[in-house]
Length: 289
Image (tube, rainbow, N blue to C red; front, top):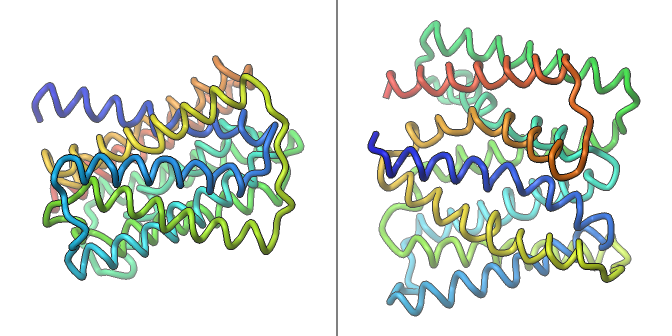
């Protein structure tokens, strides 16, 4: 793995993790589904526009169209939609920790469902991940966390894991920026329908809302996705996924610095255990691959 790939992986992990703190700021002043659908409309149009300017085509392969629709619904609408709703009552650091368990869930699913061989290192990583989650959740639940918001985050990470499994390798074949932009527009449509059915839109204009919304459209919404696809094309999905072990650290640290969310010793221990578990699972899968 060269230095450019390492820097790209670090940048992706930081941008991905920062989305939870910016989302927490957004939902303080705007209804979550409306805000998220607007974000995907802007990010999607930008992505498609840049793709067209670069000469990329609307003509995707059947596998790419399938990936676009599945990812747009499961990741952009279900996963992030539920997280935006949950972060009205759940801290950004906790939402980031739950979402960061996605590589553990994917590793477990590929072993149990797809029959992928998992080395002892990977098994140990899964056990470590479960222990880390228990450590953190025991502290947060005893501290009075909103259980409904916690459940929504849990359903969201399951949807994200399912999307990751269902579209493995389906985005190859070029036009990757066009695929990214169209995925976001699919998410926009799905979220708009959900907003019309379940939400009363509202907005309280403020400078923090404007700054957080612009940031989430451009950085986690578009740039992080482009960097991820670039990283996957450069070093492969399995090796790129190793950088997910940094997400618990970055997610908690950014929420602590930006939002002043508390960080206890039990949280720090749990985050470290989860990160070690994610790294072990990814290294095990990389060796198997």
